[in-house]
Structures are given as C-alpha cells and as structure tokens.
Image 1 (tube, rainbow, N blue to C red):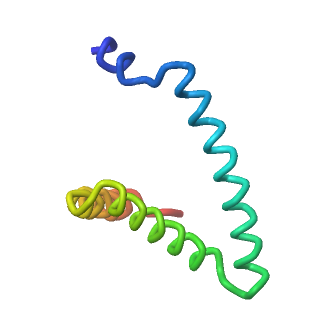
Image 2 (cartoon, rainbow, N blue to C red):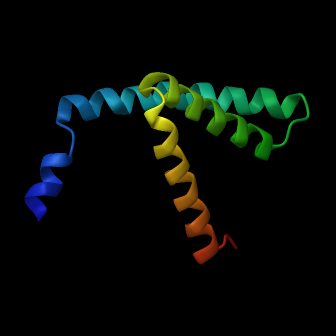
Length: 87
C-alpha cells in the first residue's frame, strides 16, 4: 500500500517546479486580494471569483469531461461542509 502512495509522489525536480509555480501564483493572488479589498470587495467575492476562474481554466484545459469531475468535487466539498461545518 505504501508503494502505491510513494509512486504517486512527484519527483524532486517536479516538486521544486511546482513549489516555484505556487510561490509565483500566491504572490499574484495576494496582490489581487489587496486590489479587490481596496475597491470595496469582500474576501468572499475574491474567493468565489478565484474558484470560478480556476474552474474555467480546468474546463478549458481538459475539455467538457472536466465539468463532471468539477461538479463531483463541488458536491464532495458541500457534503464535507455539512458533515463538519466551519466554526
């Protein structure tokens, strides 16, 4: 079982590249959040817009088949929220 888990982990080179990309994206998201707040938008608006944009990007990248997977992920998130609501 642990062999399957270990084989699914990215190689060090890939992990380094993903970490660098995440760092770049995070800095842009931080700036975008600041910009949204400065024009009077709430964090909830920002979060919803980011998620919608990411969903569009996934659908564009993967085609129509992604829509079903995204709906399943959204349903799982709703189910999890119902099971363990935020406090």
